[in-house]
Length: 129
Image (cartoon, rainbow, N blue to C red; front, side, top):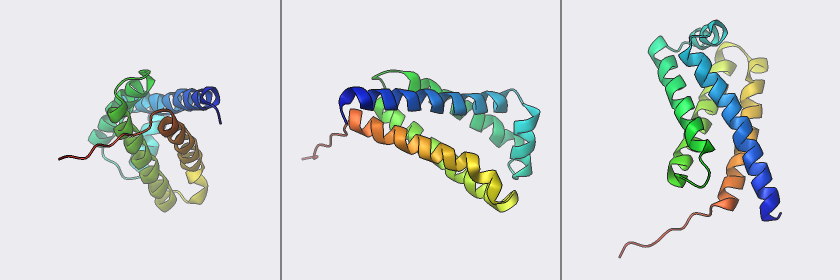
């Protein structure tokens, strides 16, 4: 796969991830009744929902900055994966298997996006002497 294709897949994934998690974070911060009802049904307290919204919006802003804050982007991807995994297991436990479809789709989408991120920005490690 050439660099141009990798960049196209990466930026498409970043835009879709940003729309998905940005909207979710916005709805959590604005107390959207549908989002709040589902999140509370899963057993999460109000203060956690606000914190989740702040973290999602902050993460989206970080992801959209081109060629900047690469180490922080690693943490954002990690946070997104944790969010998806917790959402999957919470929904599976409380709402059943059909409710996990969005988490599965998000996991696949973010996994592809992250793998393109790693192809574009290879990690370099140096030994401490």
